[in-house]
Image (cartoon, rainbow, N blue to C red):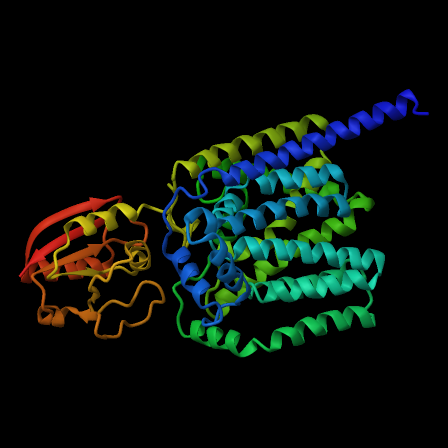
Length: 495
């Protein structure tokens, strides 16, 4: 027979579970909101191309294989193509909760899941058709299974860890760094001896990836000789933590508040580390997010830069777990103030995200841009292009999207000034039938030439190549029309 105390405890337990489910529902709805609103941008149309031929590129292939079969069932709409990212990101939130509960306690799990659930950084990649949310999920799941395998010692958890890790490393190459970090972490901080099972698991994963190693090395050596990502500075490390909290949609005051709060919380870390029951797993989580970021930073400084915050997304759960442990260890008043402040600034940044606000410099969102409409441009050309007209681009960012949405056999060209490298790989542009240098534009047979120009941000400015092409066209052709479409310029020239 239930006593009043046990009945009250059961009621409180069910109330807490319903509150957790409600919180998760809010996170899911945040990710569902406006999921199909934006047109595909450059990277997402690249995903569409990879989905057609998933093993044709040198990227890790599993996400593209998933998309290959996904689109056969659900089609190529913006909503359907982004939905897998939504689900992987949402399931990552659940895993962070379970991981926090397993490593520490339920309170830490809830707080950590709130951080990742309200992070505009994660919201961004939950609504983008790329592999980042998938590798986040697999990385978090792999560590959860590794911890269970260490704790239980059962072979099924080791086998599941190997399986998920192989999927992860075939989804994104940065997963290899996570595995290396996990191996070091459990050796040093969990003091797991190198038993046959441990060595065998990591050896199987290494051998399993060796089949794809030539493709990886092909990409590695190509990037070695030149990549568009600039070398990071010490400020890049601060920006990474700021983006983990507020994403790309903050503004200076919000980032300053987050920085001050992080400084105060990390000062409190020294007090939290005195608690023996938290120390071992807390130090492990600190290592799991600090060590790989420092490795990528040092590699990028010493060799060639691969430092992009979106590539570091799979290390972010351990950052949230560390914050959750610190905040969970504060007294009730300080905990409430910290949580409320973080939630408020997160919601402000989320609102900015939905409003397509990205006010900070490129350093805060390197390689990431607001998804601006392309369908109106396509419709304009369908209504206005003539049979003897040609279309030429001067910036690569818009070509893929235009081709995807137009579905027409327009004569498309790329005009370039040989002085400037291309903007996607920072390599020289090579002439071909449809890639035309300035000196040979006059040889094209056309009544009118439509030129589509922009920069990557589509902020109304033109990049170096676009400006050079426009100056040349202005001097050699007659400009009889120009129109701006959300930062993208369309010019029409007559010979």
